[in-house]
Image (cartoon, rainbow, N blue to C red; front, side, top):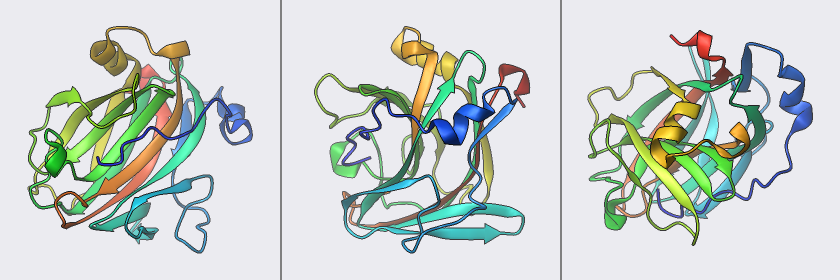
Length: 225
């Protein structure tokens, strides 16, 4: 999770992209079936480079349209601004696949703080939750991210761990409102999510990592699987 500075998403929302969908049951934040630019960045997403050379591209795996990310001692992210009302759409669902884990990666130490797949949900300039696929920390591990700017808090939740499920597309679903309440002990600011970030890094362990993300959607609580 190195170079974990919160994205400068601010309060400028992509109203044209998502506000018109507010009445719908599913708000699609990333299906990755549309256009990608010359650098492999999907439309409506921004590439943020921290260390090394980003390697990002469109990936079609059967019926699954995804964005693939590979890190060779690098750290970079894709991020998107949005505005999601958690009172109506508290559920976040996505697919992810890890093909290579950083050797010895473990978010609990700054020397090994590398992960093949990280999904951040941004709630304000100073609050975020990071859902991780970690190499070493066990699934269910919760902690505070280190190395963040002053007055900023990023809560970490490990959803997947190790290589037993590597190479498989796995479905995740989280109730963001409940997770925020449990991790921060209060309601999310304005009951909104204002950004999402997909990140990969392997610079601390000097190794390689690879992952892909697909079908990122916000849903109502009644849509729990």
